[in-house]
Image 1 (cartoon, rainbow, N blue to C red):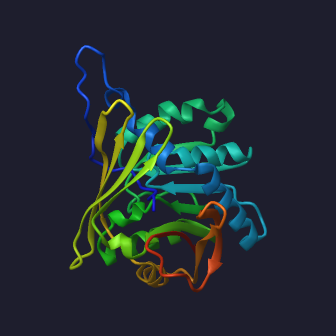
Image 2 (cartoon, rainbow, N blue to C red):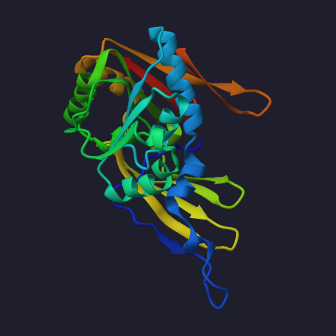
Image 3 (cartoon, rainbow, N blue to C red):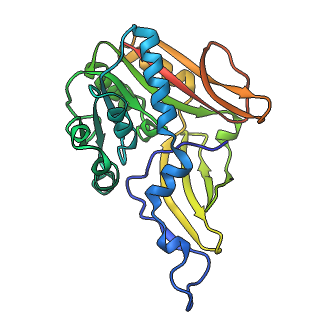
Length: 288
């Protein structure tokens, strides 16, 4: 199972593998870790399709205001403002370097009119104050940085306060029995191999250490391009804490299965039961 992960706040990335010699820089040395991450992990078009359509289904109107917490490069926020001329987005993240990359590579590529409807904010999601939103997102398991129940509940309450009366909070989650193992998974792409590395898991406190590496055809490697120190929250825990924070209803959306491709279909549907798979990814909605 390929994990869709949030960028680390401290990792700088280290290149290794093939030596340069007289042949010039290796592919790893020339690589841009943020561009690789987005190519390997994100599909902002599909993500925005889901949140936009589900909000419309639940509320009978189109959402206009979206906040992307732990936004990283703001890729999702940019996709939101591209969708409609009256869509507004705010991205919040603590990492100035990654926000700067997003400004230079994503926000700068928007039209002047679109740039007026987006703001990437350097702030802590536990403290940030923004206008009321129709949608708040916490994707790529980013909120797992909050390892204590009291901190996660505090963050969820902050989100609740940031939503309009009919606002919806969208999150994702992963799990399955492989989630508790130390393992490496490789996914081949055209110009690189994406490696998801669950380096350690402590069953006593639930702490999980993960890395993302990239391998290249010339034999070079970008090791620990991103690293994550998370708590592996389970789906029942997340739903219970959302309820404690004041959300009145939560719904789990499970990915369907494509028999022809023998892979996930990309379509997420509401469920109350699911198979005990080795690895799964789901969405959660929490309604105010």
